[in-house]
Amino acid sequence: MNITPDLPLVELIERIEWSVRAKNVIGYVASRHVLVRVLLEMDEAELLRVPNCGRKTVEEIVEVLKSHDLRLGGYTELLRLKKEQARLTEEQALLTERQAQIRQQMEQLEASVA
Image (spheres, rainbow, N blue to C red):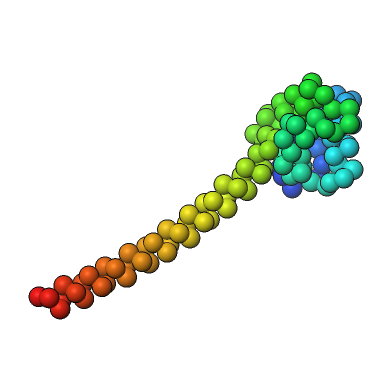
């Protein structure tokens, strides 16, 4: 089964065999939010604040997510990195453009001096 951030939480509950407590915790999150993305945006401390969610339940959720190459807090980090990458790409384009302008000015100066 492929778990993605856009998968409805209800499907996550239905598709995976969870302990009763983990199922209830994810059900609680699902009652307020729709997509797995919300679960992936949470960290362990936030999950522990969900009623009846203890350390063992968090560990179970973490292990299941890990088995699908996902992790708590991972989606937020992914978004942050994508924004950083876009910013750096934009900066690189500006620097390349500036470099071309400087090269052109240098060529003009060299031509006028020679």
